[in-house]
Length: 99
Image (cartoon, rainbow, N blue to C red):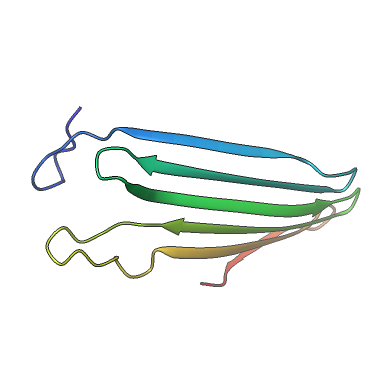
């Protein structure tokens, strides 16, 4: 289905894959990516790693989007995100963005 906000309008033909799992009792990690077949390039890559025990959670996420300006063929700014999550199961969770 064409996307009306893209000029000229075009449909998206994408392939995505990912893997995630527990490393041991406390650690987990994952990675996923999306490739656009129509334009022949990556459009998204993201990964995470986290630690969790009975009272504490610490997680980091990295997200990279590869959006381009169709006129100049340059990447848009602010397309990389680094997030951290700290959780104390008895007190609550806190999030902050590093990039």
